[in-house]
Image 1 (cartoon, rainbow, N blue to C red):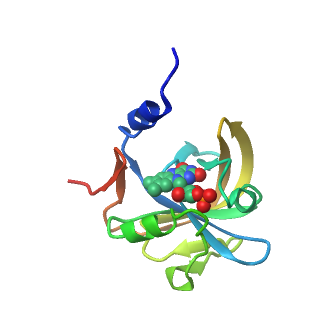
Image 2 (cartoon, rainbow, N blue to C red; image 1 turned 45 degrees about the vertical axis):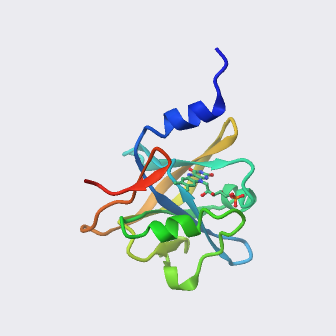
Length: 159
Ligand SMILES: Cc1cc2nc3c(=O)[nH]c(=O)nc-3n(C[C@H](O)[C@H](O)[C@H](O)COP(=O)(O)O)c2cc1C
């Protein structure tokens, strides 16, 4: 059966997710952020998480080569940040949106629900995406706050 790509995208969108900003620092020292909802936990021991990066992203080289990065889970009132860092070719982080992390310096987004500081564990080819597996080195948890939810192509809040 030949699958229609748009129908597949719509079907996959029926799976509700949170929204993250993946942050890293380039070799030139520029802080980057990219909006992603492909984050998933993999393993508790060792502590591994993953996300998927589009092969045709303009920042593919920077993210696929980053030894350290952070996964920042956005709160319900951070939709503007999600839209801002999903703009094509526009991933330079505004200094007022973050502080450098302690493990490897990946940017920690202010007021995220949780930020995971990761070091690269492995990458795996995944069709038109690259699967990036990271080891969690440190966590910054904000115990309060509601998540930003993405469902059927739109932002939602928990009812
Ligand atoms: C809710 C949402 C989730 C996204 N999830 C991912 C993702 O998991 N992986 C990814 O590479 N891009 C994802 N994107 C797309 C990127 O945020 C961004 O739009 C894209 O990388 C822009 O192209 P560029 O990388 O060439 O600048 C997502 C966008 C939105 C709005």
